[in-house]
Image (cartoon, rainbow, N blue to C red; front, side, top):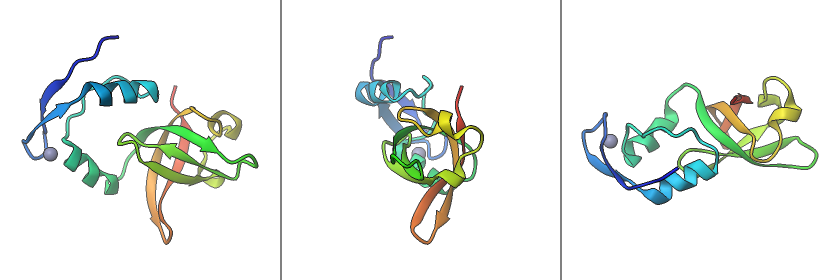
Length: 119
Ligand SMILES: [Zn+2]
């Protein structure tokens, strides 16, 4: 797979932004599907309050498998508790598992739920 900087236009605010090689490589390394972002980084940040499924990759899971963190598309990490996992926790609660998840806000900040394996 070859990467090159792409000049894109945000479909929300209309601004031009660069989709950099480094970002494309990083996302590929994390196992995200190859797709061109339709929104600029600023609009993507605001998107974190929007409902719906997002693609992520499990960063790490605590040994007792009660909680862990998911790497999000923007590279930030989001907390999850094992009760937020749907389906077989053995499949989901392992490092580098590609997952879908939703985000809810809690008193302690954002938390992932409805986490299931991304085939
Ligand atoms: Zn934008």
